[in-house]
Length: 193
Image (cartoon, helix red, strand yellow):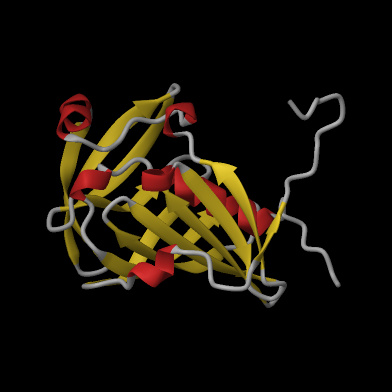
């Protein structure tokens, strides 16, 4: 059986998107599905799908013809990385405190500079600039969803398109039946306790 590299470039982009998702206020996130794209300087554009329901998130990307899925479940303190082709998944503890960003909230908005209003893929947004680790980051926050539908910094642009509000089945946020759990390889010099 072919073993997948969990550290692949596109899957890493999925992890980056997961961190981006932490920028929104999960309690305010609407229930929706969307297509997304991430354009990073010097790399291929990453395309995929995202599903959000309350504080649950599912991202799907295709790399070399294979679908890779990441499910983030803060309610269970877990992130699952799934490869449907192999019917396997890896489990990683969800650690929101390890993320170096704060949720997009009314408090954060007070610290941001409002620079205007724009329409992004049919969504009326308020455009903000924020200084993060000395770098200017621009956010387009949907007025309707209270959610960033576009984020741009000096290296990349992330954008949500074809946003469809409405019920997302709970099954989208669970590991499919019959999938085998894969353990993370031990790092050299690390003990198992």
